[in-house]
Amino acid sequence: MKRKAADEAKRGAGHGAKAGESLSDIAYRRLEEAIVTLSLRPGAGLTEAQLIDLVGLGRTPVREALIRLAQHGMVEILPRKGVLVADISAIDIIAALDAREVLERLVVGEAAKRAGPDERIAIVEAAKAMRQAAQRGDAAGYTRLDKELDTLVGQAARSPYATRAVEPLQALIRRAWYHFERQDDLVPAALLHGGLAQAIAGADSTAAMAASDALMAHLRKGLLAMLGR
Image 1 (tube, rainbow, N blue to C red):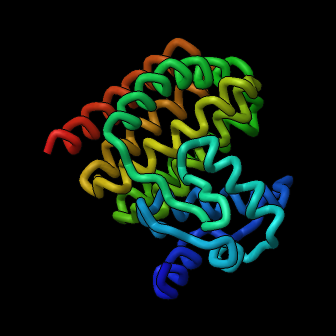
Image 2 (tube, rainbow, N blue to C red):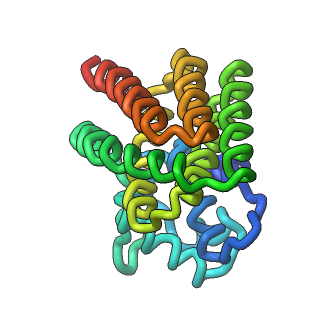
């Protein structure tokens, strides 16, 4: 990977640490964001030294993050050679949408039932921030906030197995959306996220699941249209 690409990836990789994160978590978040937002392009080959420089952390957390990314289908680890960023596959996108739709219904339904007052407020605020980023045309900021909203909803659901299962699917779809430059979709998608957040905030699990279905249908329609071009 050329130095210019590495610098661009580092600038976009969201280096602020969050409360309770391990070094491995931080490395994973930074690398995932760089892959999702295409700072690290599909098919790019990277060395371990380049990745350590990119995330600004040591060898162990980077290696641990890479194992998780490989398990999630975001990279391929090549023994003694480095890492290859996974291509974006139409088959993978459709399969991820199918699985994500089922898991999202479970997660958002549980979040609507179990979220605490502060969590409901945080979910609504994250959705508002997404709408503001959409209105500014800030695709990178929108993508980062989308992940933040997914994380908040997952934490509120108190369903760790479902949340862990859906996280890599969310990242894969987020990456495909970014790849196809769905700039025109920022505001419509943000409004659907807002409806979902409001349903969770209102403790209405039925409405939350319906809002999730509407969002998944919207994503499916847009991505299938792009894949069909």
